[in-house]
Image 1 (tube, rainbow, N blue to C red):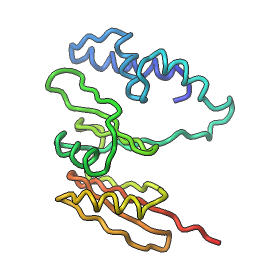
Image 2 (cartoon, rainbow, N blue to C red; image 1 turned 180 degrees about the vertical axis):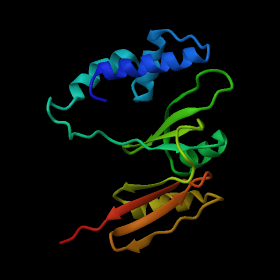
Image 3 (tube, rainbow, N blue to C red; image 1 turned 90 degrees about the horizontal axis):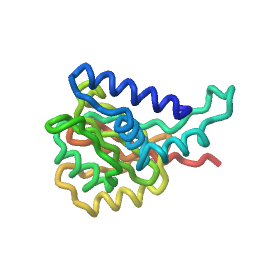
Length: 182
């Protein structure tokens, strides 16, 4: 997303989609939801920050951080795994109303993940690579938690150390610490 105009377009698209379902959402409320989805407390903060973070004009190859969307089916199991076992913090969560699917962001040490109960957002069984440092320390932390459903190990691969964790919905996170070639 490059400008606050893109964020406004997202809010407009959300309002239109909700309107098709007979859900009326004021434009200001839609802007607030979009701001929360990007990790900001309010639209005013997003609008102030987004333009200053935009890449210079003509730099189409400037990428921002990718945030994977991970399909979940049980909120309690997702919280137990992502927050309890992996130690992520809940940044925000959103539902379009009572008895609607959950969409939330969790984060830890700069890594952000979106967890979604929405059927169209992602397919279960995804596989992602997270480059990291201090993998042995993370492994010890997770081992010390003695999570009932997973006891990950570390393997030495030709690209470096790797620890794979699989969530209750068969999504895999491959934490990789690259070896420094000298």
